[in-house]
Length: 304
Image 1 (cartoon, rainbow, N blue to C red):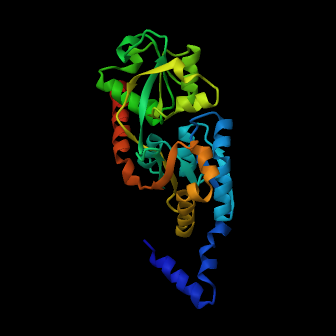
Image 2 (image 1 turned 90 degrees about the vertical axis):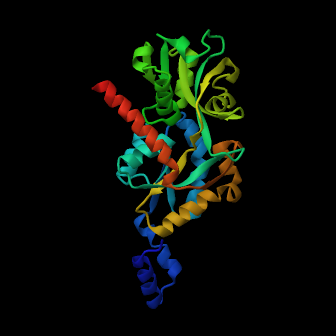
Image 3 (image 1 turned 60 degrees about the vertical axis):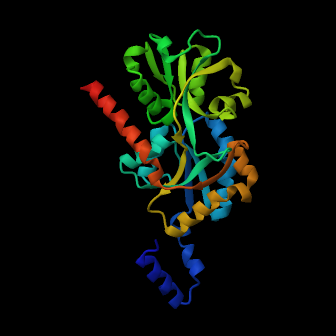
C-alpha cells in the first residue's frame, strides 16, 4: 500500500520540478551500504562461495554496496535484524518464526522453490550406513547431534517428532549436542562423536548431505535415513519492515528475477537444484510459529 506521506512527498518533488525517479532513489543517501546475512548452514568459506556472486549481483541491481555477513549462529541473524544492522536475511523457517515471535520488524518477501515446484523440505535423522540402528528407539543411551536451537530441521522439528514418540531427548539419549551447523552435524556423525544426527533433506536429489558429497567432504552412501518428517515450509528471505518502500521494491525485484538476470549467480547458490524464488509473506510461516511455541512449552514443562 502506498502511504499518504509517500504520495504527498512525490507530489512535492514533482511540483518542485524534480524527477520522481530521483526522489525514489533518495534511500541511497540513508543506506550507502546494505548488509545481507545468511544463517550458518555450512562452513564460512562455503557460504562465501555460494552467496558471493549473489551479493555482487544485488549490488549491481541496487546501485549501492551490498555486504555479505555470515552469522555466527541463527540467533545472530535475528539479533542483527532487531538492531537494524542486517537489512536482508536468508533465514531458516524456525529462526524467522523466532524473529517474528520476539518482535523483530522483518518481512518475508521471497521463498525458495524446489526443482519439482514444491516449497517445502524435511527433517531427517541420519545414522551411519553400517550401524545397527534401524529406528530412533534403537538409539537409547546413545548420542544425538542437533544443529542449533533455532534450526527448524536441526532442532525444532526433531524435538517435536521425538515428543510425539514419547521420547524426552535429554533423558533418552546419553548426550544431546548442538553442533552449530548442518555440515557439522554430519561431520560429528561421520567421526563418531554422535550416533545419530538431524539434518535437512529436500528429496533424493538434494540435501545437505548431497551438497557435502559434491564438495568431497563425505560420501553420501556412508549414511542412511531412519526417520523423515512431514513437509516443512521452505526458507524465506526477509528484509527489515521499515526500509523505504522503493528500496524494498528494488530488492524484491532483484531477488525474484535473479534466475533470469544472472543465472550463474543463482546456480551458484542452488547448484541447479532449485527453481527461481517466488514471492511470499509472513503468513506462510504461521505453522512454524505454532511449532516454535510448542517446543517452547515443552522446555517450560521440563524446567518446572
